[in-house]
Length: 115
Length: 428
Image (cartoon, rainbow over all chains, first blue to last red; front, side, top):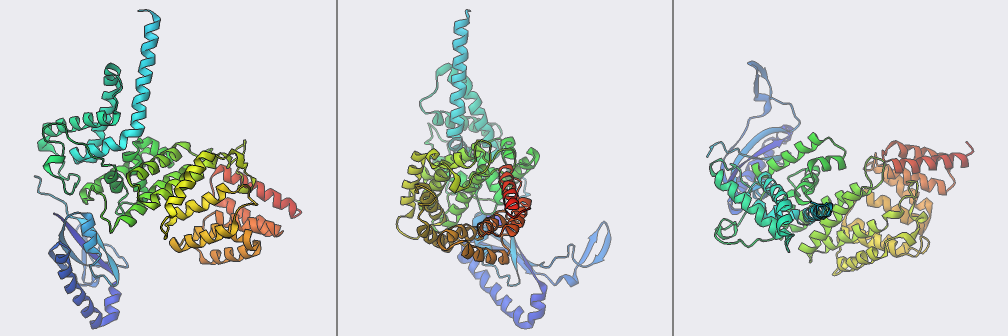
């Protein structure tokens, strides 16, 4: 098995405009996703939702600035760390990951064990 | 030593070199695909296979050309791979090629002669994996399946060798780092995955058929490679109708390529072409494949495109073409594969069935739609219809618009001549 990060990129306005209902719907979808990963033969090793980019602080060359590192329409809003057999399997799982206001990116985790 | 034996030896050397070159063309994919299974690393596999071809030059000169060059080369490359693996066991790549379902018995490390399976499909499906960009798929396929050098591929696609080398390296790295499995897709995903493979082969062909630059319209080397790839797929997947469709499409298109330009390299329209020069046996081969590709209903896009090409190729003359039947095929093609380019090609048939004005109305819809902005065949087709309607001033500006959008010298020559013709007709 290999490890992949599923990075969730969404327009933050989606949740801001949709209010509590939008958030609630998404949370329920994520709850279902957690079950589906197991059914697909994968495993969730970790993951979290991030507070919006308005709360972000960036540091470059010791200079501290307010805001995200890169301004984008769709911002990184959460991530999962999963285990999957190969990229096809990881993509199959990532396709199920809820991201109603954007999409997801799959990135392999680098093996730094050096073995 | 007299000069005669020396001449004979030189002749032998040439014969051996030709045999190795032939084996390079025919067996590269088979040898590499089988070797990658041992090295579990595409770069290392390529190196071992290169070495095996070099070794063949010498060995075949001494022992004669083996009866099965592919098996000889595969055995040589795999032995080299095993030697390297044994020597470098500790240095072995940390991200090996992922080979699902590999057991100890078939990895070639056991005792005795391994049974060498045909892994070419694994190789080509890996090269054309959807997680790789289309241009990377094309580059990898030509490099790993056809055995072209990075320099040759760079030349074919008019990019620098360093750009192409970086593209190939990045794609190989992604295959191992992201763990793109070295396997044939499962039945459920096969149609989509196969479509990507066929699209890559078709792209190699069309790049050869209408070279984006350079002095000639056609690059015969790419065309030959694409047809070889399609034949290989046909052999490996005899039941896939779209594979039959693609091979048919390439054969029939290529069979007509000799008449696309005149002796001076000027582009000729279908109606101006001398049909007696078409390669009839090749068209017959293609048409037979079309029948297979269409069997059983619900034909795919390559089968339908091949059927269209066959109908053109089999017509005794342009006037004798079965236009209503073509229109029906185009409508089915649009349902199977909605594409603005197909809609544009359909307008040519509409003009034959219902007249230029009806076709012009369809063109107007395509212009409004915007998906073909920058595609030179759109203004070129429009210009031709306007010309036939006697609207020469409008035709002229449409030809000029088309001229701005193409770099191909043969096409530019054609469009320039048309501009001159309609200018005269317009009284300029």
